[in-house]
Length: 243
Image 1 (cartoon, rainbow, N blue to C red):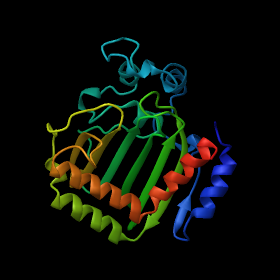
Image 2: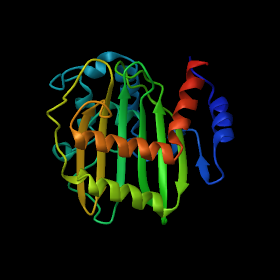
Image 3: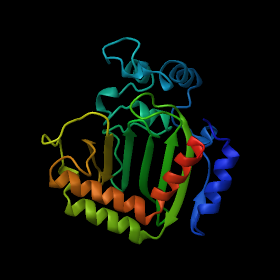
């Protein structure tokens, strides 16, 4: 069931705190990946079917679609249909800003609403963005339908940065103790700090993996909680399901 945008807007505005800036996703204001032809191909071929899971060697794969847009594709940190679905950039690791701090988590939860959480600094404030799609986790990515933006003081940014530093996020790689399982959630965790980019992939990291994996998961859950984005996500998913 698709919930009218106005209903989502009213409900989320009701939940929002005074320090929040909230908007429902309007993809028209994005400059990233606005090529109409490519976007239409994605919607028609990948967004609502399992075609997105084709082997990347297939000429009709999602990677082939992205390759038409990114000529420097060999230096892209991670390419995933959910990132594209949410009108977010793929990170070119040859063009990292030295002064930028940015943290993004993309979650594909089987049977549920895919979402993304982004933390970054903007004009001395911590900007937290939650995005969801109208897709179905584990089956098809859908397309961006909801965006919630909230602003906090720099203490939120400082706390997140400190936690990631203490947990050695910037040097974490694959966790071989827990690779993948049935159902659950797949997390893509990316960050930029002091000119360095890192990306790790985890499956249900709150419960599966080594201590470093579980600690990073705790930090992300902390960020969702202290920014109120956990309740925002729950409200959005309830509205979409008609409950």
